[in-house]
Length: 143
View 1 (tube, rainbow, N blue to C red):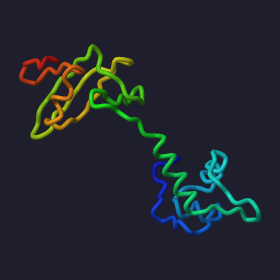
View 2: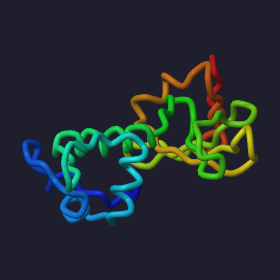
View 3: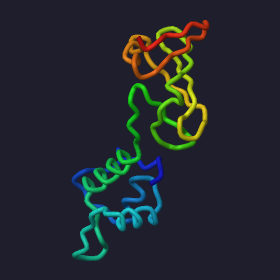
């Protein structure tokens, strides 16, 4: 699904043809047809086939929700693996700037560099899960 599909222009209580649904969401008619084959409900009693606005909105929201990856506080999102991963060896570098701590580590699966921003107030929650090496050279142990 293209990330640019708009749901704000879809009226919940209106029915759309495939072409109208494509115009309202900003995607092509091929995309709408693809969504139908993936489970978008369609009223096929008559021609042209009609798609309810609320069904279209729900389908797009569910597609977006299924693409998201949940990442725990002590995990990183690895762009190479496209998944939530732990830091190799449980170590991460920590650079503090203002109210944020910027963590940098190595992905345990692919060896790529992973980054994450965490509020300084949440750093104590990482104890036991991640050893942080601060920029000044001191190591914060898991204690």
